[in-house]
Amino acid sequence: MKIFITRNIPDRGIKLLQERGHEVTVSSEDRVLTKEELIAKLKAGGYDAVLCLLTDKIDADVMDAAGKQVKIFANYAVGFDNVDIKAAAERAIFVTNTPGVLTNSVAEFAFALILAIAHRIPEADRFSRAGKYQGWEPELLLGQEISGKTLGIVGLGRIGSRVAFHARGFEMPTLYYDVVRNEAFEKESGAVFSANVDDVLREADIVSIHVPLLPTTKHLINAERLALMKPTAYLVNTSRGPVVDEAALLDALRAKRIRGAALDVWEFEPKLTPGLTELDTVILTPHIASATDQARQEMSRIAAENIIAALEGKTPPNIVKG
Ligand code: GLV
Ligand code: GLV
Image (cartoon, rainbow, N blue to C red; front, side, top):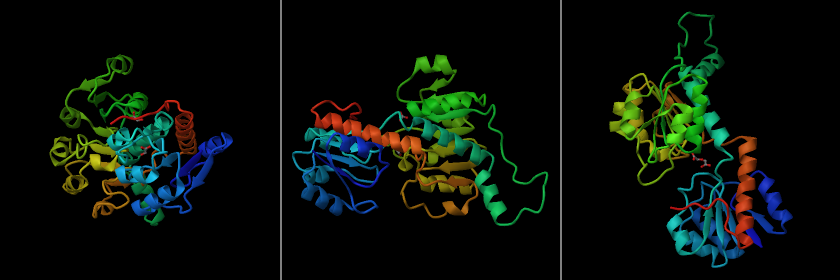
């Protein structure tokens, strides 16, 4: 059968699809396709399955352009806010994601950001490269220790719980907020549940965000909630940019209402809210938390396995629901 991949990806999954005898077409442009381009390619192709990226907006128009034979849009991501799940359900099209295989990568990256912002590592690197180092100084680039500090996890899914697991190595008391309480996790980890996200923001020294982007989580971290945070606290976001009101965050950082922020995801990706780059109290990385060889190859495999199942008339293992 015919499969379209909207942009080149690591090859593990592509090989799997080809080994099954499927005809795989990878978009010839190595960039994000516009909606018009995507629609044109899908209309022309008559594909049975589409492997799409988080940078592709998959809405009803795109699904209709793909045609009635299309069985699945396999999203190459764990997040799936780029896909209109309701429109897919109405058309009996499967939508799948790639959970699990990027959990280590993203949780490690979140922890790397926590350490990097607290120890001012990117700032120190900029300082060194600029030739500013004149010799050891007692008060050069003083950072903060994270050992024993309170970690606040907002969203205790696979990734959030993995970050909480790493925090145990630093003996960090951990609070978490989620719409679902996980008492088994509390027993095993010692983490404390909070039914209210505000309490986590008030008490944590480091807040790490791991919620999906939903209408209910858009701007979950807004001006009022930033105002609850300690002036010494850090905010780390590896989930989706729009969960944080970036203008409000910029104000809070400028006014030193919080100590710093590390953002792997931005509200208006790939654009940054002007002003953020001027602040040394911010670390900015370009949505690379899952960017390890291991995770990206495994995401390729999982996306392919979902497609293979759908094309064999089976239920794909990683169906997502709205
Ligand atoms: C990356 O952001 C993903 O959702 O996999
Ligand atoms: C995503 O993988 C999550 O459950 O955090």
